[in-house]
Amino acid sequence: MQKTKIENIHAREILDSRGTPTVEVEVETYCSKSLRSKCNIGRAAVPSGASTGAFEAHELRDGDKKRYLGKGVLRAVQNINDIISKKLISKDVEVSLNGQKEIDRILIELDGTENKSKLGANAILGVSLAMARALANAKHVHLYQFLGDRITPSLPVPMMNILNGGKHALDSVDLQEFMIMPLGAKSFSEAVRSCCEVYQSLKSLLYSKGLNTSVGDEGGFAPSLKSNKEAIELILQAIEKAGYKAGPDFYLTIDAASTELYKDGKYVLAKEGKILTSDQMIDFYSDWVRQYPIFSIEDPLSEEDWSGWNNMTKALGLKVQIVGDDLFVTNIKRLKRGVDEGTANSILIKLNQIGTLTETLETIEFASKNKYKSIVSHRSGETEDTFISDLSVAVSCGQIKTGAPARTDRVAKYNQLLRIEEALGSKAVYGGSNLTACLK
Ligand code: PGA
Ligand code: ZN
Image (tube, rainbow, N blue to C red; front, side, top):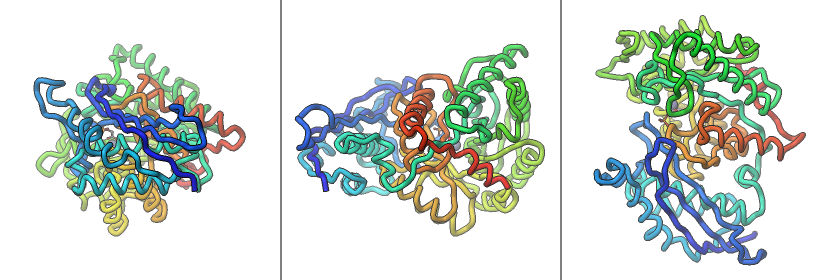
């Protein structure tokens, strides 16, 4: 088995898409077969959430109010440059996912806490992902090939966010994300094209109604609307205006990010002037599922309302995809509880919620063994890093959530998927028809 030596690890503070600092890491390995060029450098940048779940791995921030309002990441950077690099430099690593597993195990042990709060999950994840890229380069394969060496790759259906609300666009609607899924498309590139057409038609529709066309954190429009329902109605009009049919061509997806709406055991829909109980929220969604072509609802209820989640799954779990984001936080232990109790039927996958690549892959594998679908996802604070595009293809999970076709931090992910589709050529499989089969 090919091995390579870790020559250097270096971290720096860079900016994410909100102008907030984040961690970037470079891992350099030596490959005896090649000349000692820089070909084995792997670089990765860490994303960051706004509507973060309470059970996520710990994002280490400096708290020094004199820099970036306390949001600097110099301590995480220092933990990599001083502590992690000392432990890993000169180590021989197998150029495979086993080698990756070994590095991630060392990182977890070195931190020693349950939620990676000592070194910071942002420090650990940066090293873990840069390592994977360095190993892929040492193997002279694309990242998606390295990550999915046992699986036939397939391209994901975009769960494309075109209207932002909640914490991502404060003056817009209560629910955080309104997305479209081009399940009727024949290929990934056709899917992206049709989504862009709907996005542009939504823009002109908003403009014609005198509504704001500025965008939220994930690139979706953020108009000031009177109700959440109005967002759905506008999107349906935009689909039609672009020449498509809601239902066969496009389905709708919602991320309510309900933990953010949960106050004293109730759900506050401020824009609509409503305060709802858990059961009333379920009625609210049931009504929408009856009226609209909804494929998926993420975080319909709060991370604290586990019994509500079970009721929601009983009510709608056979009709729609019910996705745990804040509820499961990409954590296999929390997902196990979900499987045992029959909570939700899908999981959102965010690398930085758990903090290493290996743990992420284990959660995806556990989900799939238990017939839970996985959706690989970005964070609202992103960089130009496109790791999740390769990951979504490598694990063939069939769905990716990575924002609007606007702002380079979001578009970069779609562009990387277009490159992968081209590289796969006639072997490129698009996941749309498999998902449509789930609806029956
Ligand atoms: P976040 O939002 O990255 O701000 O947590 C994304 C999501 O909730 O899915
Ligand atoms: Zn979410």
